[in-house]
Image 1 (cartoon, each protein chain N blue to C red):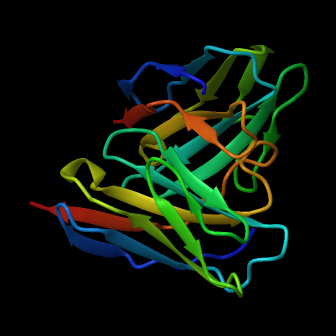
Image 2: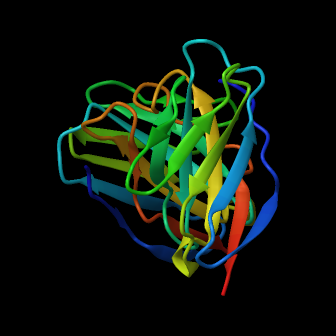
Length: 112
Length: 114
């Protein structure tokens, strides 16, 4: 599994875009980038994943650099309910065979 | 998607006793995973439970301390044995649903050992 580095915490104003960076310079060619979040007192929730191309779903967008050494998760219009710890994970399976390796994550705080 | 129910949601236990945590999934799944989240920390994988075979434990976790049962494709239990205050954590069950890329988690069992 790729080692990932994320800022410990970030603030964002409600209604603005939250941009969460992740460094994964050791990621290998067959490893995906996954993002999960954990709202207080809940289990982690899948957000999005990608390999090379940028991805977008109803929750977020994932921008992966061309060299795949870093990525950014974008929450386009952050709300107070988006306050959570966000985990960036780099590995070659979605947790289906090996489980997931969680790093320390970024504590995102959405300010009213 | 998969819906996971964990029981109990929380418990306070005496040191030296054991607690069994149940995980029920609303669909059949091949593999189930158990994680531990110590206070203020991230999640750590304890073991992988396959139906019909012994669980596979990660480094630092042993079967005598965390025995796991997997009697069918929708159910698993994790027992925390001979508990000490250091076992105070949130224990979470997880499965992978229809998409191989999306894992689902239970709400967790918050265990406090006194």
